Amino acid sequence: MGDIFLAGRTALVTGSTSGIGLAIAEALGAAGARVAVNGLGDEAQIAAAVAAVHAAGAPQVRHFGADLADAGAVEQMMQALAAWSPADIVVNCAGVQHAAPIADMPAATWDRLIAINLSAAFHTMRLALPGMAARGYGRVVNIASVHGLVASINKSPYVASKFGLIGLSKVAGLEYASAGSRDSGGVTVNCVCPGWVETALIEPQITAKAQDVGGNRDAGVRELLREKQPSQRMSLPAEIADLVVWLCRKQSHNLTGAAIPVDGGWTAQ
Ligand code: NAD
Image 1 (spheres, helix red, strand yellow):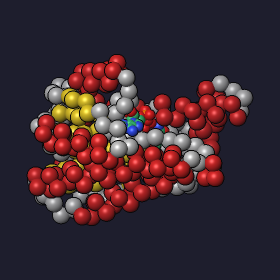
Image 2 (cartoon, helix red, strand yellow; image 1 turned 90 degrees about the vertical axis):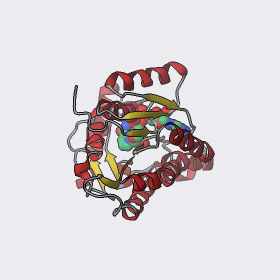
Image 3 (cartoon, helix red, strand yellow; image 1 turned 180 degrees about the vertical axis):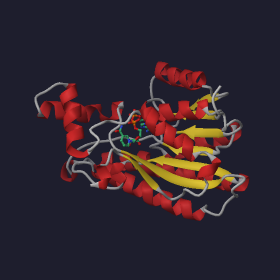
Image 4 (spheres, rainbow, N blue to C red; image 1 turned 90 degrees about the horizontal axis):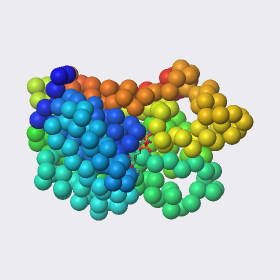
């Protein structure tokens, strides 16, 4: 058995039915946390995600099916979670993307993207942070993006939502900085800002790049990396998850209000 330093803790990971969120839910489960899985998907996908988090080592796993575009549904999810086991760790990972120039961006897409990528995190945080402070330990890790630090064309709601998420996290980091103690672990709020990570989210962009260069999927990946990510390597979801687990350790009590890039040098340029 590994280091189960999160035994007795409860973690909510939004958007954990696939990709980075699923890897984070597995890693927190492997560290001993009870895990609340959230995300969309058909029955089989949800059952597979719950089974994977169990298999990783989580003592208890439950799926909360809230559609995060709906603020009322987020509030209901947080009430149901509090009745199950209040969250010591909240990872806001759910996110969606839509690429189009500003002039062609449907207004409804803007509203939906801001609701899922930004407002849902505000709602989970406002409802979870007071309990964390009262218990002296809490971790909020918001999965932002390099696009919370720098912009790219054709991603107006995505970039706006991720810049907003970093600002929101800094405010919350300040508001809760003095909660708890070194012994209890304190309450911290941070963002992780990945560059390209191999998940379903970026497949449409890989396909578009492959078409641009008249090549196959590998050529599309190479072109995406060539443009912006100097390491020329994608991250894997499990690598992002390792950082999130580290942020949940008591030793990280003084790391708060930060936006941590994991981007192969993208934002160092
Ligand atoms: P993904 O598409 O594999 O996973 C997205 C998750 O969000 C899924 O579980 C999905 O069900 C959930 N979700 C989407 N809409 C939802 C809604 N309305 N209600 C509830 N859940 C919803 O994508 P991913 O690549 O794992 O992305 C996870 C996060 O990482 C996102 O916030 C994304 O912006 C961020 N990110 C990804 C990359 C990348 O290269 N993949 C880079 C930087 C940041």
